Length: 412
Image (tube, rainbow, N blue to C red; front, side, top):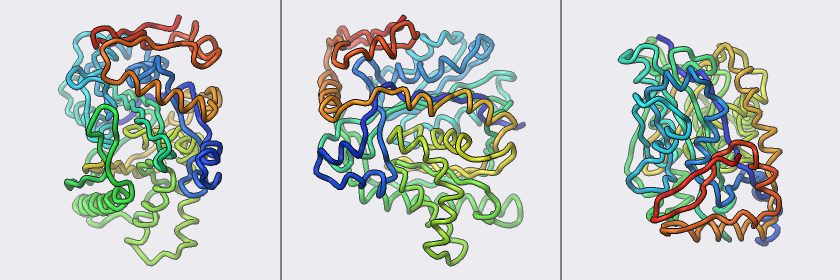
């Protein structure tokens, strides 16, 4: 039975900040983010949005009434849950109007959490335990505040929603191909509700070590099934990597190219430009999306290449801590049409760009209500944003916190 992604949608938030402007204010070389990190800008949430609202706003345009009746599994991959016990998948289930005979839960493993959610859904569909049923997988995350730190340039926010079924019109995934690898490391983590910690440089090496471990497993499984390993460069038209920042895709791709043969820097760069970089077009604008990284890359790849149905791809997902997975897939028969409907480029263009000063005000405001019992988001910090991006547009928003409980309302 084929399984994979039947529908996909993205929510890129409604605010942004330009990294060249930010670098100039911080006293850094203005071209550093775009030239070194392949990061141009990032998405931001106003204080009346959070991972719950992003998740709902990502899935809502994608679902029809038939989908709602057939979804029996809802999994949210996240490392940004606002509650330590209650999964925000319960709010998502309610506001999307899904039927009650539906499991729901969150998966947490840093940036790998979204792929963990997808893998769970894929195997559930493939098992046939609920014939005709579908799964909804959502990845929704936002970064903590990193004001004044170099890591500021790899922060971001956004959500991805995917309908998983036995009718993979967007992406058919070979669930038997997965190579995975785990090792306990302390590269990056979120020790409190307000902080992210760890060693960014160490995380790069942990990522690359994990990449090679998963790749070896991926190749061993290919040999067991096919009698020989994949020719990584020739057997796949495109490669998608987890990218906390775009340039990480180049490091990952060069590492695996060198596993098969001696590759010059020029050859590695040429291969990267053709097979990987097109997938980074939206990632470079939305910033770090954590669990949703590879799926933003999938949308970017299809929108910015002549990729065709049946084209073979590889995906690599990594989560600090660590766990990672590599798997093979092929584009579905309606990938281009369904991804075009997302209109992600237009959504990114429609964001309101903040000045650096307003961005700093927003980050401090967002930090101020973490772990507090009572809060009401001010709607007048950014002149006209509510009227232009929310009013009468049926987006879910955070009305406020009362006794720690989160209250949501539609913007119409």
